[in-house]
Length: 470
Image (cartoon, rainbow, N blue to C red):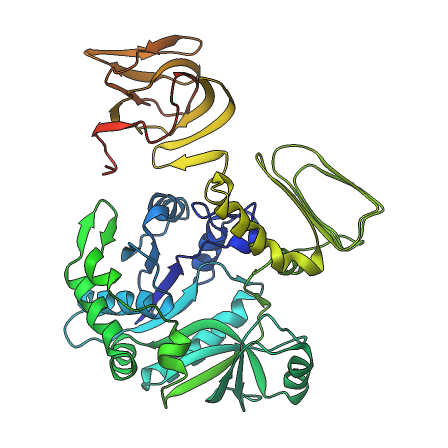
């Protein structure tokens, strides 16, 4: 039995402004129509002996992850919520402890550990590599997948293994090299890119982790033992997990074990770690341009051009990245995109919301988009999914006007409950308990006009909430 473990906890800041802390790259459709999380799950189809996946994700991403799994028709064995980030070694320890807990006594399943934000262009080759890795994992080996390099790359760590003709024992893990050393690695044929994908039995991983980092095992086993179910999610014990040290699988286990093996992988892999690598992972036109959205080019070459909400026009550009969202625009040479993280750091230091949220914010019931604001007013476009409802709530500092544009709204306002159809409106006075619901079968669209002395999202007092939010 192979249990996929999908790690979906990253924030993807190097793909800002499209990727944000609360809507990171694994939840975006960056290459094709599926999101990267959905594509990761889809490429598992055809693997023999596959069990339902375990998803490990950030607590703040839980509803987005659950909705994307539902849309993809995937029923997970568990969605484990990390209350804080502790890197990959503890995340996989949570999944391993959960898998052992859920299987019949004495069954030690093989885990296939995959980041949710990678691109693999050749899924068939990937599945063959997984089959080879599964045989080694069943024998008790700890398997990693080494990407056959097609160029010297300074952005990846490398694995040294004599694996030209198939799987081989790992001889060395090496850090990201400089350009000269990377060229030597590739020329030798003995070095492979470290993909961050792994296979091993759950019990073997726990055993090796207990040998090399016992404190991680102690805290993660305690976190799973104290876990509680919450709707579609499993909340591990917060205190136990907060006390867990932070470490990667590579540092905690793979570089220390005597049982590390590598399976070579040549399947069009990319970790999409920057705008330049995303450009390389997409299909370009004859001029080398990748254009997404409403883009107009004139005499442009080797550019990545992304338009989310308006026309982006480029003239005479070469080797550039231009990314437009509703609230930010990034312009950079392709060879400087690694410095995007410096911009994000400055935005964080300045307390700017653009590091964490888009203008359109997704909620478990739908979404809202702040389309205008000024002194003492804000205008939002709200979409409520069929059958969904907002919390029963109240505001201390603002009143709200609701105008239905599409669908039917069921409104609770104080002691009254009534329906509103298209082109009808209502007023929610400040301090009045209220709720918005969509009882219909089509999305409910409405315009909300807020007015008052304070319009922040933290001016919400919740009395009841279907989704368990405080």
